[in-house]
Image (cartoon, rainbow, N blue to C red; front, side, top):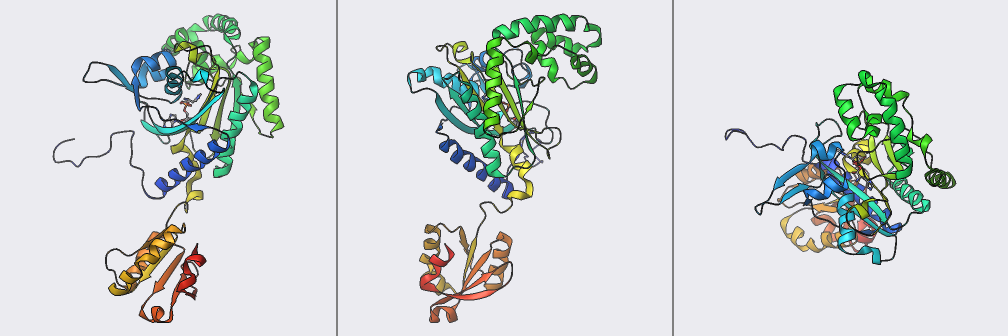
Length: 417
Ligand code: HAM
């Protein structure tokens, strides 16, 4: 940025304004309400953590840790990282505060910015907002079912169109060890068909190749042995129980034996929700079980499961469907300075009664006030001039139809609330 240029937001970030900003607040408020109904308590963790937390928690083989972290050194020479995701911080807090002594499972939810140095495109930002929930301290498949139902309920409540759920399993360490050998054996036979990038990923974690976007790797992976077919008896039983539980709740899902998530901490259940109107970045939320994470961070063996939901993408999926959310409902147009002063308390009373309302704050005349009301998109405008005031009434105009009626001032608040 040269001195002559005006500053702009950094690449991959943006300002969120107008309808989109209102819709976003509505999405987070709806999530908050639903979390409360599922007995989740809010938690706030710092926006940055010691870099080591993500290296250990999210995993050294992941794209997030290898390429995407916003890492910096602070004035004291500590390596810190803007959080790329919310699970490792919550797990860190669980261990730090000895939450294993609380009533289990401990159910926590959060919302806030996540930072990933990714190539920006539609639906993919370098700073995005997630809300997420984590349930720590029970290995029961009922928790998996409840967590998935919770997120499905949030989407339903919001009216997100074209939502689909994919379900897979990462198994337990026993399933993984056996499958890894089979997969590496298979890949060794196809080494020459794989591009260099895939061969490199293969060394780090061969499962990640199921997530590859390039054609040669996809062709190889189409025939590769599936982890879902290699689950240990215990892992298979867990997976069936989750499927049966979702069935009982009437939550439709597709079994996906190639579902790979971006973090190394997952065990057993993994899932992803997509919306059908988003293009390439269609994942609106995802999560899974992470039974080894708390121990990995130095806590007592504690199973956990949770999800993160991409608020930016949910808002985009809602599109026009969310246009009217949270906007101004009523405009109070009072004509004349004296009357405006006298009726000042009325606007406050309306607001106190829960009506989202605005009135003029710039000494506009009647015409300009009506233009202001129209620009705000209110449904109702209340007009009070000398004439009305003397008769103790207000003119209430329906802004869509233009219909007007008179309402006694004494009953106005009740009428509009
Ligand atoms: P994740 O799948 O990486 O999972 O992120 C969750 C959601 O955040 C995604 O489904 C997507 O909607 C949104 N998202 C991710 N990256 C971006 C981006 N660059 N721009 C816009 N939206 C994005 C997690 O982060 C895990 N912590 C979820 C979890 C919680 N697993 C267990 N507990």
